[in-house]
Image (tube, rainbow, N blue to C red; front, side, top):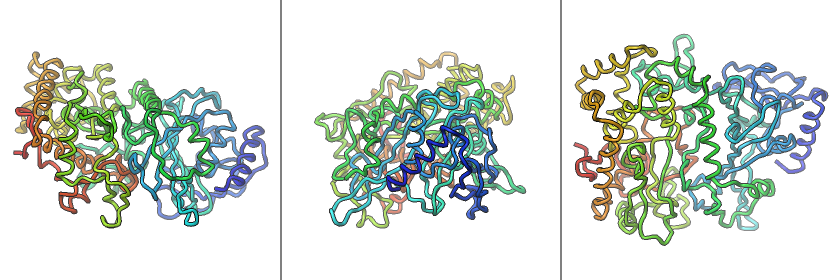
Length: 591
């Protein structure tokens, strides 16, 4: 959008916000159900205020439908802000404070000509009787690189084209009445942008009801309500990533790979900056600060009584799923950039065991030279394997890895927080948590053995005797994982401290092995498998998006030694081919 148009629109919005009695103005967007391929008829040309389409009904939200600050702000406008930049201006005009964070979508050394970045902004201040604190409201928008053939350079520009269905803005905001987050989007219409309410935190729980459970095989993993006995698309696109219902940030822990930090600002290369982005870039906050706000949002949702009551009404399998399986994913890596002068890297312990088992052993040292040798052995390159051909992939520099070494999926902060809340509520105790996460200990993420035990949890809701029934089901199972868990549950000496000691001994073996090149080669093979597992897990089967955002985010290098068909799965390797033997601490072929 041209600045002059943006300023003119802002003037109209600011006047509407001040008077709230302006003459009716027709919105330029068209109403449609998000899951339909065809748009519905245009909304009334005499709409008195900004109208928001309800994803779940195909109709507009009624006045007063929600209590969140965004709904109140939009409802006060004579017409809707139709893209992210106009929305920013509207928020600032209403004296809200915006705190943007920035992530490089194609890796820290974001190569030209893509220039692909995302801004995620926290909103604080007061509006409509609600005081907004960090964690209450986030929104995201995206960039593109417009190539200037005359100047022979590229300009970092807003990705705000109003092409049909183009995602212009995504946002979640706390609703103090519901005590849940509401999720909204702006989508392009071909003429402008239209606002959609996609659903709330409770709708997400409904979308993922089938996840990792013994459900009807004729139904998809993610689905909306049945329509005449037939499955429908999920209620929210957002449920493909925000599976616990709150804000997310994959790179939640330091060093926040590919995010702007005060210690390690993003590399913009030769990109020129569009003037619309200058006030954003001038106020970018460090990812460390932004991550704290994400955690605050998680705590606000997962710890509040209303959400806990709604979770308690779910089936016991759904409640316990984030303990036995995965709902969200985080990424950890070495703390220092690979290009740093240090001769060793710190491999996150979460690559080998659950972080709770690792306790105070947060990383395992490894010689950088051995790690780089392993990357070269497997022909690792930070290359866009998703492009039409490898030959045409953009790779202006000869990178063999991401910005930080050994970036690995780890058990998410929100899944672990949910387990803590279940312990605090008395549903389970700490021993139960540690007994479960110690099953198949060296597969801390996406263990089919451990996750499969979820289906032995009694169906239906919570009952007084569910523990006894679960132990009976374990006793009746021939699965080794069931026998292992039952033995731990019945052995009072297998305390959390006992399990932590087992994990600590394993990590010591890994550290000793990591002095040898062959062992390091195995750990890199295992790392490739850990990454592939996310892409192939049920959490990545949402038809409208998934946590690692393939084709949009480029997070990991590709190990080109493996066949191209396997690369197309994700970055090389064969899922489940190798495992970490707890007896030796070495990576071996799966028996």
